[in-house]
Image (cartoon, rainbow, N blue to C red; front, side):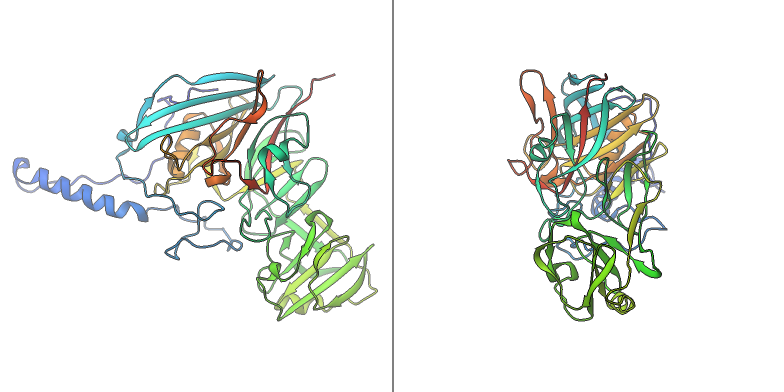
Length: 439
């Protein structure tokens, strides 16, 4: 693992601010002009946000900030304090102390440190995982059903081999509890996802190699290739689209998956590969035992083609067929270049990254919303991952969700950071680090 504070690795930075060239002698105008420029930049800094990728499709239901113009940066929708603009050379002033490093399991270590910066103090927690180490593996974890929530320790406790974990994807915190993006677990396979939007994912391939990139989930009715399905076990079905809900979802949520709309809706139930009903009744409060297709608008009109008694085989797969997958809301780094330029809001943060030079997966949590740790902006998080050696990095859910779990000698597996809610928040899913001694 690289030191948290190396200076040799270059990273991308937000656009540099021009320095005015005075027409009169510097002693006359330089001071006032520089002061004016700094003041203007401080006012303009909050509008500097990351531009969406050119190929990005409209995302799923996400609430807006209080001003109604920007989506929240965490599932809880809290608007973070605006970070004071500073030139790059003043942002970091080095650590207060050398990082502590503890052994967690063979190939897995926990590092923790504090850093004093011109914006305030931060406290960071890093789990490093040697993915090629025999016995070490990463997996997706949840509470047993897609729409069920639990704390990170509760989810990790479902598998006694887990030695570390962090919270995962953004989720529908105020309604269904379901994660927004893609989830693939090694034993149960694909659990949820969407064709487009919110598909920036961390994956483990069939050969055990980690990757960060876009992944598309394709769900279809084998006998009706013209029917386009947009989502699988998602918090809601977009207008004019079709969503599928399976046994993995849990209890049916009724009109909550159609944004409380009951008009222009069609529901098709499939049992043992055959359509058993095609009507407008949205199931609620019962366990889903077979695929249920929910259509809205144009999607509802497409579902009329599925006649009762006809065959309907629902198949789903993730692009590349990874063994494990989990999504976040934005790439922090791609191919060694920082992509997240939003240097506005401060929040607790969680990120996952890949250092291909050392064969290490990086799981980083930065505390925030506390006097002892202010949190990071998206750019600061990306820059930190770059300094730690990541070639690719992905932003996971933050805010009160940010939780890092690790096994420590004599203490067992427990939370090592300071969640901003004061207690561990219930989340939709996690990234688990497990160890089993090789035979």
